[in-house]
Image (tube, rainbow, N blue to C red; front, side, top):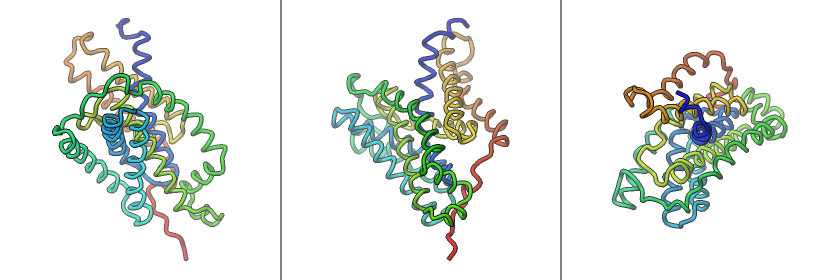
Length: 290
């Protein structure tokens, strides 16, 4: 077991936690504003696919990352319009986006590359192996500062807790909620882009493998607070890193090892969801009184 406890494990934990942290921080902005964003999985998928395709054609990972952010914001805008403007059921809207983006990247990959399973390999020198990691962990103190030390953060939290009072104080509930959802799309897309042009060198079908839902679990476990959410992501990242390193070391069927992060997710949700107090107005469409 000593072979598992090494510098490589720490490095692997940070790398595997990075896409979770980016998606979870994105979800934090949306849900603090009162909009449930269960579409994090789909937003990560669109970011991963767009980054891989654009990087392949432009040979620039930064252009690929920028395109991924734009795609994430676009899909998040659809979620925002449905939930905020048309007051659709937020969980249903998020799941619809997830289901849509499980199939659409494979369809487009078949059209572009005549392969629905994966996009072409990207050369090593065109990957962003470290920048997204720095961005993810730098965003934790930035998000803390934004939430608790800026007028925007105060308004965001007010809209998620008591939109009626925020509206009475002159805050545009609709505008703040749109901002929160669009930010979630941008950050989740960066997390997805890191999977395809950072951890890996191509997009493969359904490559997020439930990470969007694990990020949502980390957000709940972290009680919708940036530092606690980061620690929760590191815990899930450690579970995934251990599962990877245990393969071939521990004599257990590989299938049982691979389910460790998902079992941990279920345990966390079952044990801690009742202890976490969500923003009071989350999931409740706001209708301005006339």
